[in-house]
Image (cartoon, rainbow, N blue to C red; front, side, top):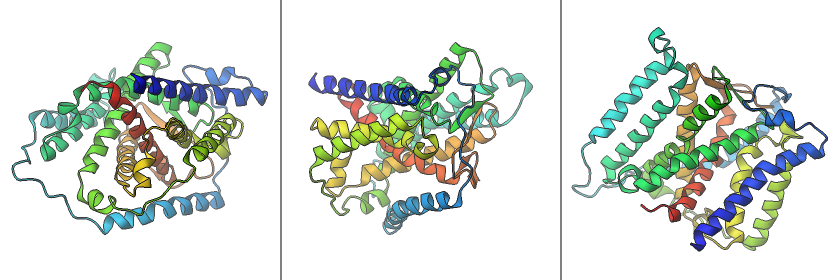
Length: 363
């Protein structure tokens, strides 16, 4: 009961900060609030900075500085995990069904059959449901367990929470307009319901992929005994980070070209800071002890899902486009190549949300 109350409090604080602070910054800057509350969003009002080689190189150096050492460590530990005798199972029938459905909806998403025209904009959800079940089936074959079969309550809870979770990002995007949709319905309720169905697949996809990665040898053997990173004065540091995140969110709509990356980073900083201040277990506890597995698996899972999101989006009828300041060049599908770095903290956010749900899910 106390844990559930704490989670509710953290969610409330997060919601107030994510919803209220950007609007407060806009109001204090003397800008009209109405265009940021337009629903569905149609108006393009953020003027993005053009491509800049100095900015591109600075972002690239930072991203490579963080990721290359981790990739090198993974390459040095490629050994697969030994499966106990008799544990490996045959691929389940429901996995084959999901795989076939995924191929079927992939074909429909990228083609333009007249008889399918009415449903053409809505292939995203069935395609990703197929991915989710397939990922669970692969893990079930390897370990005999997966979220779908052994944590069904938790698995089902992820879908509505995921929808709410992603709507927060849609709201924050109003202030930076780094992506926008094309080929979607304009009716308010249709936009809401079709968007909600699509957004509901995000957490199950990322966390299912993370569970698969957690079962790999390169992760278990390469990142279970990293150097410990002690965090002195953790509560003081958490309070400072919380204040900085709040300041960044307040300014994100005023300086969208400078602060657009906070859209992905701020929710994670707020989550973890609130947990540290409450004295609760958090994502950094394992890192402090030198166990980086959950961090690496979460970030890698979101990056893998990001690749499929962007690939399947590319030839779909209903799709999204990007407009990112300073780095909008060298695209892999619609996404600028450096934009994929945003999936790394996003994966950590997905894990934090999943961890918060476990105490309140029955199975």
